[in-house]
Image 1 (tube, helix red, strand yellow):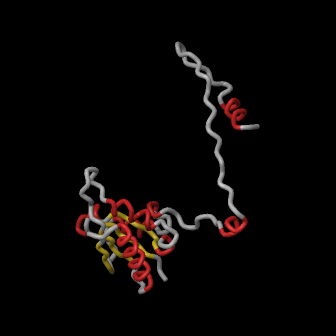
Image 2 (cartoon, helix red, strand yellow):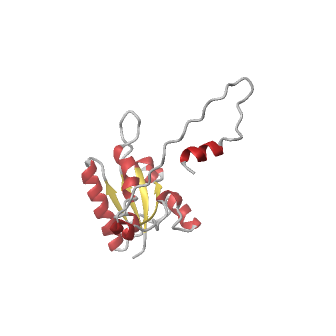
Image 3 (tube, helix red, strand yellow):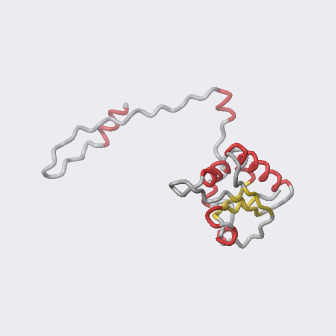
Length: 162
């Protein structure tokens, strides 16, 4: 059964409200799945790590400690004044180096931003960068910093143990 047949079957029992005229249902656009080559199919594997915003990699007590700023901050990275590419490189180096020397909790300072919308470019990009395949395996969880550590202009990173 094609898309149209499925749609017709799905709305078969739907009736218009009183006083409303019936509308011919639109056919949803077909969903085309991208085709992968054999090499891509063999290397494609399901995402093994949960998204950083859910604290799925840590227990509740550690999640609360991170959110409340109770972990000892072992290093800080200040991204103020850097371009996006400079900030991305600095973040990648900082996370890899911090994990390499066994740091557990670090602070990344992005700034709050000063644009019309009030959100900074780096503030929005850092969480996305941390989800990239090169950085995600190093990071266990993230949380916005408490006011004494920079508030909304900074982020705590809880790194995986070596």
